[in-house]
Length: 316
Image 1 (cartoon, helix red, strand yellow):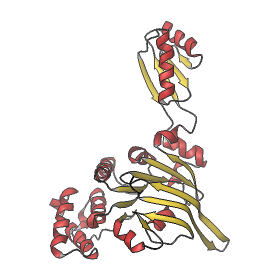
Image 2 (image 1 turned 180 degrees about the vertical axis):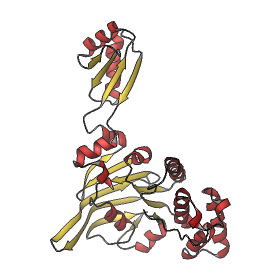
Image 3 (image 1 turned 90 degrees about the vertical axis):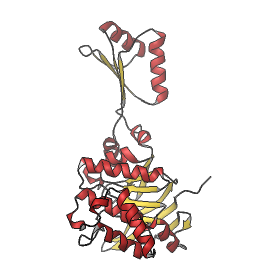
């Protein structure tokens, strides 16, 4: 069994201001398996940025134990830095340099030889579809191109774990989906991604597991599907060929909201595989044919609002 990419226990951080001590992280536990995408969500002030800053060695925790990429964060910070990459919310691209020069600068900072640096830069320009623009100033790039270059710069050192902070902020839908494809390719190649995002649908689309942080505490964690099942609002909608079948189904199931005009029956409750199987078994035993079936679950916006009691715009 491989070690997790991140294992944090009892992580704590607080600051002092004019009002006294403010607890930012109140003993959180995190486990991120290797080769997965883990997304941390939460409203403003929840502690997301502080968590990333601690895990990426930018600031020290006040308490708890953390291992990142197999290294003890407190005693082996240099080893952690050598194993990770960080792509922040604000691009680190130098707009006066060309795309190639930006990559070569990162290669120098990573102490690659001139030959290896040029080879790595060429590989990344090609991988991120920037080869034709490689010798143009980065200031002439579109927003999507700059974000791809920014991520390419993070990959110069071939990190095993990447922290992505708001990777698609400000991008148009097409560029956002391009970035999603790149992230999936990285994970397919064995890289672990720790993602923070203001777009809840982005976490839904990408993350293997999602944790919801609020007021310095983890209040929920699981797959997107597991989180959606934590709150009410899920239902199964059944469509029938005629009113007789609709009435028979409602009687057999003993629940549901019928729409006689649309010939549909909305059955509220658990929408997990077991519940769906049991529902279908009941209808099948009574020879009630279904024309169509669809499953409706709350989305992550609903989860966020219900569990934090805040509007989704405050997830940033």
